[in-house]
Image 1 (cartoon, rainbow, N blue to C red):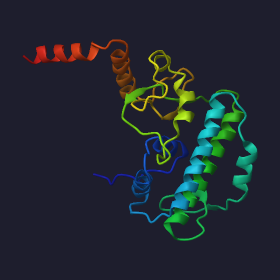
Image 2: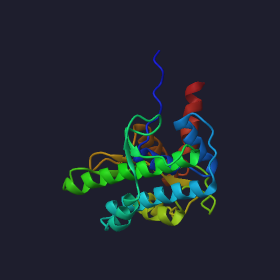
Image 3: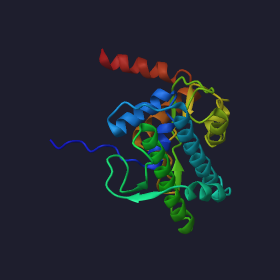
Length: 229
């Protein structure tokens, strides 16, 4: 059986991963998954990486809500990046050049490479006259999560804007719920695509039923027990 290929660094995948990060350990586990080693990362490096991801997320939101993209700040960030085109263990062939050999240097190179990748996507997106559709999954799921200053996930105030696109969250007054969440995955697809996967679509259907019909789950469990008898 051939060895499993290591995960590739991709700006959208990282943005989707970030949505699930609650602590710095989650980020470090992601780093380990990519590099195969436990990192030694100072808090300042982690904070800078997070700021970059949040900046990209803000630009994705601007694209979605038909608002201006902050190209001035993006251009300033790009001006300080040194590019390299060579073979690298973790980074793609075209990547930001690491300024040293520490884990912090590698994380910075990852950060800048992700920014480069997003900029390339943005350039194509703005040039294709609407042929590319950047979607966010409309799926819902249940999970108890704290939205506080320690969480690395996007803050609740940022999320509320996206949640307002889901009618049932408004109807059931769940826009600020720490238990019911909108799926955080972005994906490229058809303009009318709503879900990132069939699993997410089915899970959302079940949750919608529970929210609109309180006895749905109890009835479902009762029918299941009857079939097992």
